[in-house]
Image (cartoon, rainbow, N blue to C red; front, top):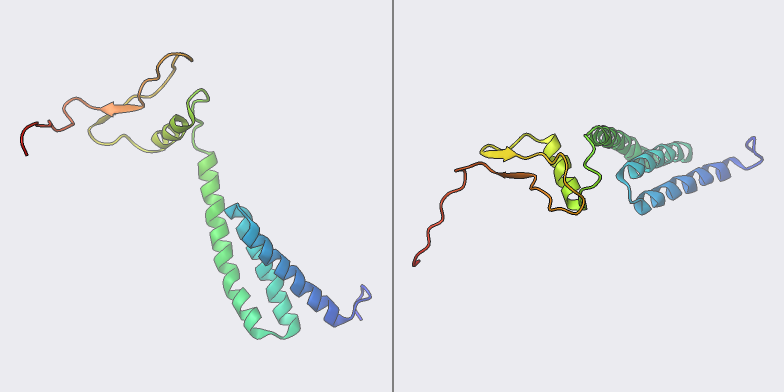
Length: 146
């Protein structure tokens, strides 16, 4: 008997069910960060289950997957930190413009293009383009029979 009044085998089986539930939660997750946290928890739970139940293939599999999930979790955290550290887009911009503004703020201007930053536009007036080709950077188009 264990301290909780359950037979030792029931505690191990419960650990297996918890690990299985964490795995199901991984598949149901829509957020990659949450998925990695759940997957890492499932790896730990399944490794403990494999150890206590004497299931060496289960133990080996989850000991191999845990570092992979930890590495991917660290990548997700780094990506999320750099994304939130990016400058905020103009709140009055249309949704597509906000994404383009954020992309332009993080990347240098393309060669041959002048970046036209949108400092302010009247709420009901036409918005200015975020960038436009520099003078002479586009090839001339010839019309004729082809």
